[in-house]
Image (tube, rainbow, N blue to C red; front, side, top):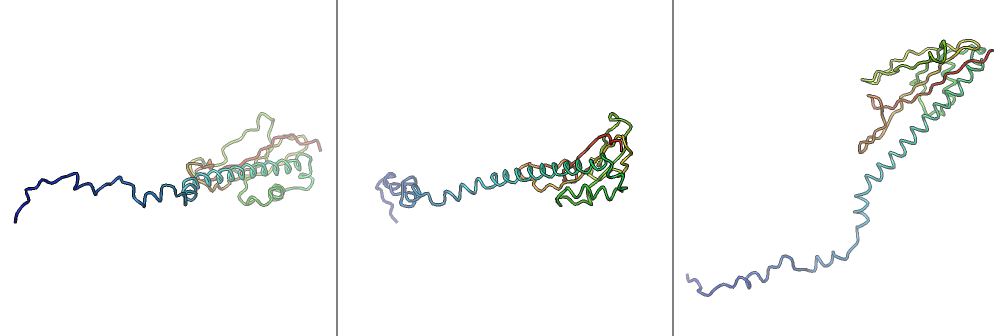
Length: 192
């Protein structure tokens, strides 16, 4: 076996190998914009739908809170004017009066209501109605609509289920993953 004594020209050997040379394939992709929309949508879809979901859930919770507040306001008027007392309302009938104004957005069995007579407006205080460690109810429901000129405290509470927990967006404020909605009214009964 003989070895050629001719020197090898390295430039000529690697002249055929050009890794950065433009070939037909890369030239075709350079100006091609097919699929750009799909790629952009793929990048922006998750944040877009997360923002839309957050807006919808926030507005739904706000709507539910306003509906609960309006229902408690309307039903409190029954007590304030003496209509509840003259009709001899019980807690069940008063719950039905509140639920009539909730437009079936709430499960009335999960609504907690406390109506109590207080000595003065300054004595009307609120306490925790749930255990903050696990979200279980601690409220003791009662119904005392008082007499004419009595000061009445009406409280209604509801645990609204939250649905979204995307990108650290979570509207729950209780340990069980729900949001506490509440409506409270303090008023003096008319002298009926």
